[in-house]
Length: 517
Image (cartoon, rainbow, N blue to C red; front, side, top):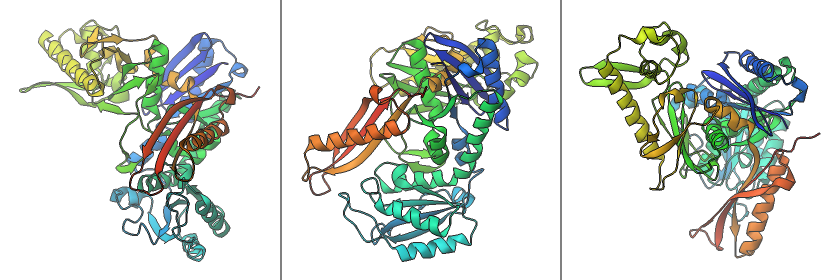
């Protein structure tokens, strides 16, 4: 199988071609505003450099920050309504209670609460208020609402009411996008509901972006299957990604960490991904990023997404270096993609971290002659500050005294030329600059289930077997080869506050991508 991995970042679009022997070719180009030309340019260059014809490519995997950026920047979001099925319970905290006011305004956020929902064991809290739901639908029909998020109490246990609500909404408003919470989030009403609303408001943008990726492939002559990477480092096909754009959140750091593991051959390490503006550090265990154990905020909203536990600092290849009476400072501001024009070694007037490394003789880039006037004490102080920031970053990601390597990847990795950081050995694998694209190219397919079981009604073994089977079905439906499935995670949490010996079970299954001949 010949795969192409693409990572579309805010500054650069990286692409890599991989086959069974390793990396065949890689490239880095500037990201274009229209998406298509940047991606198609990277693909064309990759095919030229490798000498591989377009019809030999089996699959293309793409990682993108478009949807995260849309939430953070409050741009390109569709007018959205939230409908919660849970009365008479849950009335004290309406939908979007904890949302930033500017984000709620950006989606014209309307919210409604109706009768319905379930107990943890699937029993009804109250019947679905179908009359009220039809009334809400008719009201929304006369507004600019283009997307609706439906959430029901304990819908991951019983999704019947959410499914029925979607049917009614489509009868009343045929063209509206409907997102159901049991398809998006885990157990935990508010965080799951938040994720569902964010997914709904991104549906218009997701159609535009995914179609742009499809067009880029067509322009490059590629007829390969296309997948997007999720925030747990696994894949979803283009149609699924169009329906669930929130699943791409934080896929960039995950891809970088997975790519670092593959390129280095090391499965337990601290990975530092140095870009143009920031450095992200996270812990790698068994070749997979350590997941955050607490609720993660995206754009100021609490979610329960599967996010890698990554710590970011303002140090990158374009970080600005300044000298003042207090000493030398590095970042957190950066020239970003303007490094090639504003950096001193490239004809500009701004002293950056990359200029410091060039002037120190650590890397051969640009015109070193433009840097000969920089004082030696300034270079020493700047490098010491850069090392201090990186050391603090690594120490933050380190959880034990175990001596594991620090794998340094990313385009800004030129900032690291030392053998050790925070006392740990440094590895910089080949193709380190495109590790994020490599992570996309090697991604597998996952399926996950998160349910509450009553062990008074069934045995623990039966509950685990049901969870594993459900997760496996989800993985196969997402495109995994059933013969390669493996259980990646099992988590059991007894819920002492619920009756019936209730236990929450979460199972994740991962398998290789099944590509049809």
